[in-house]
Length: 370
Image (cartoon, rainbow, N blue to C red; front, top):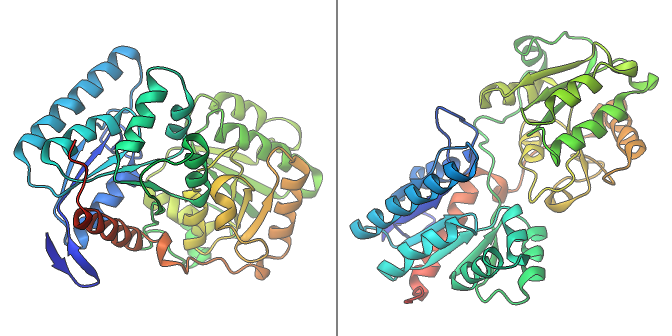
């Protein structure tokens, strides 16, 4: 390990992940790529063994994880790392455990949300997921909420559960000239605009449907909605967006590049995060970093960093009237809210420093040998 200012030592890291951006999908696992980039920026030697294929299917999945296993075994044979980071508990955690055991170095596993549910399932997924967690030297959760879910699913997980949110890139998501941002985003200077960004699926897509219902009212008839994202619910939501008072004021932009999303966040009046479940709520943090207030469902990790009356408002999930009232509050008194990302724990660099410190401590203690 090498030294670096602000860190006790600089461990060499092997990152294993089943998600990573590629030409097919530049958003797939972008938070993992961000973490790798941020650790490298601090001077860490980071190897990344990843699968960047987002496509689904039984055969594709078998090929994907076979390839990940082969590349991880090859990395283990080469060595040159002091600690292993595994993103997602299963099956990536099992693959990464091989690299950890082979070189007798610590294993740090990252839980991201849906993978924690796997620990409660039957054979083989449940027991194998629980084995990964107990095999780990450190379990990292992005929020207190998810750490609690891990403890609920496992009781005593064995390894310490540490909180380290996936950070926001504040060089991209930053405040700026709102009028210039609106021009760049193709918005008029007048009118009020809400932004939704997320996968249009049974979780976030259902929340977007709730958002459309909340906006379908005469008192918000001057409010536009921009929807960023793709998913199986898109056609259903597009059809809904033409109904009632919504017709003509809902725009679906599909996926956009990160810089364009950051520009939209600077341009709009509020960012809505109506998720049914959320381990952290990175979109809400990106909005805060951009200086834009948030209206979010009071679920998961969102309640830990959306401050009612300061950075935005919370409402109970499923309460359309509550969502409408929260939007009215933020849109009606925009000067009341002062969203900003003050806490270093939520920045990309702060997250990387925390991960490297946890890694250095695990190396110092000595990892599993089995």
